[in-house]
Length: 223
Image (cartoon, rainbow, N blue to C red; front, side, top):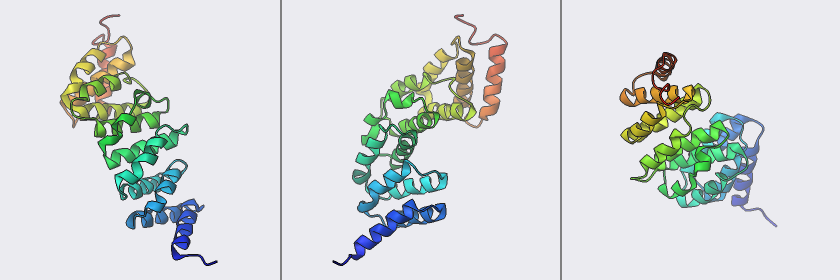
């Protein structure tokens, strides 16, 4: 029995994506993306869930975007329901890069409030890309429930998502700016500042917001 050239190529790709050396995995993902082949879509998605190196994960995502969306969406939509946080996060990231709004129903409230910060951040970015016209306000209301969450990078990601939605976020930010929780209040105020002035630095905006709250500004109402 002889082995075909296709079988040899497939074996080489699979071994390359599983190689202990990140440089080999990176080159293999690059090669697959350069010459897309539907045989490798499932393997690329599978590898995204466990790949430890950021740059390799990014190359895996790029390779997936090089394939037609109908080939990649089913597997990615399964991954967003995975019990593995990295699988959910990377699948969401890849969906944001593909940008096909058929994936929108998969961006659930559960994902937007996922307990894992990386998953939630990926969900926020993806939601802003995929949200259908007319549903921005509803999305802003869900995102606003996450104000005050996490450390600086998480808060910055949420602020960027809200700002990207535009003026539809103004009412929810106004409401959140009077919240009794000082972290929520400060985060809302900082995001309002970024909405008015996108060039303002988040660090400056959040520190300014904290000072306003500490001095008894918004956030004191309703206590």
